[in-house]
Length: 170
Image (cartoon, rainbow, N blue to C red; front, top):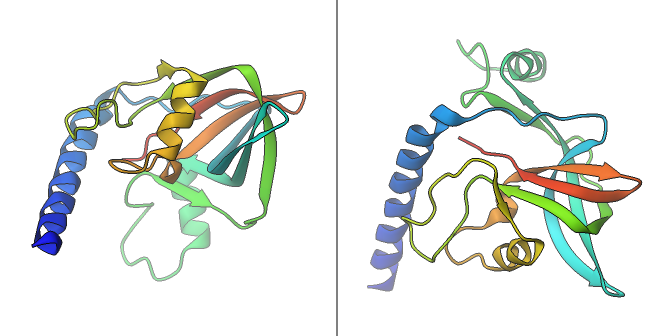
């Protein structure tokens, strides 16, 4: 019975997320990056001596025409595809982890997350600011949604993260 319930819940979540991402992608705008920006998967949040550190796997994020170009250069046996199926392409040639210190005044902007423990509460709200404490709570709660599965654009000034922006993935 548990397996059947788990399967039904998984199917419901996939259907809901498909609907949410299809309907909400209309307002999407790519994150503006600079030389101070690193895109990464966050693998771990860790407190050391009263300071928060993020351990991340830095990646290269491409979307639009840039994604099409790099996709065609790097992929083999793609049939009649002229670009990545979802409009974005990720390169992770170096899986070495990097650790960054997080500013106490860091700005955190989210696109989608579990707001209230329901599937309905996981709708998209573009660049929604949340507190660092809330981000840490969300990161450790993987019951409804695991936000570590999204890339993040980290703005780093003087070796310290001052801005974290969740990358929407269609």
